Each structure stands twice: as structure tokens, then as C-alpha cells.
Length: 118
Image 1 (cartoon, one colour):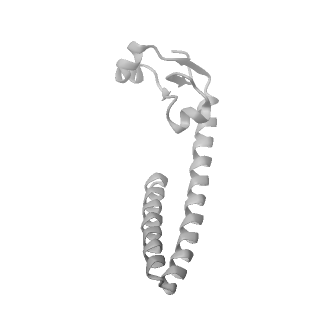
Image 2 (tube, rainbow, N blue to C red):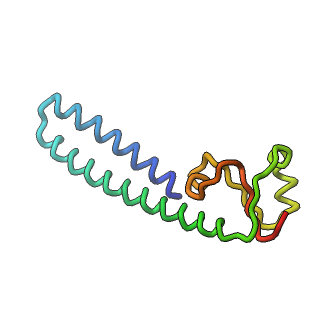
Image 3 (cartoon, helix red, strand yellow):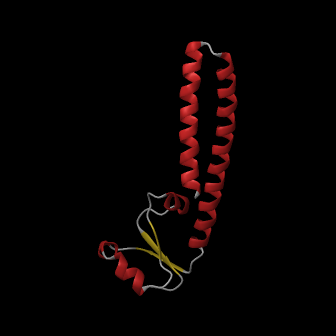
């Protein structure tokens, strides 16, 4: 399972546990309150760990992409026919500014990175 799916699964568990905690507080059920607090703490710790791993993964990928020899913004016509462009340029990586990778690198428009000029 990849990090994104695992993170989503843990967030779902955390949400379910928080709802259980609120219901237990309304019933004044001390056993479930204590158990829920421990589960919430453990899940929060796991989520933070996964978020850090995800950030490290994006950062290392961003470093590899930025170190490529050539980059330039893509024109609208190139963006429209991305399949043709990728077939013509070996090793092309396209980065969109709204993705996590795009924010990490700091691109302001759709940019192509490649080992050679294109």
C-alpha cells in the first residue's frame, strides 16, 4: 500500500475513534474514554510519521527533477497533446504547479524537465 492510501486509512480510523470518544463522553463511559484517548494519541503519532515520510519522498523526488539538465514551461498546444510530446522527448517529466511536487519545486506554470533540450 502506498503512503497516500495508508494515510487516508489512518485518517479514517482517527475520525471514527474521535466520534466514538465523543459518544463515550456523552454517556460518561470512563473505560471507553480512556481507551479512545490512547488510540487517538497512537493514530496521531502514526499520521505524523507518515506525513514526514511523504514530505521526505516528495523532497527527494523534487531534488532529482530539479537537477535535470533542461527545463522550460510547456505551451498550451504541447499540454494539449501530452502523449505526442512524451513520445518525442525521452525522460520528460511534467510538473504541474498545483501538485505537491510542483509546490515543492516552486514552479508557477506547467513545466517540463528533461535530460536534453527539447
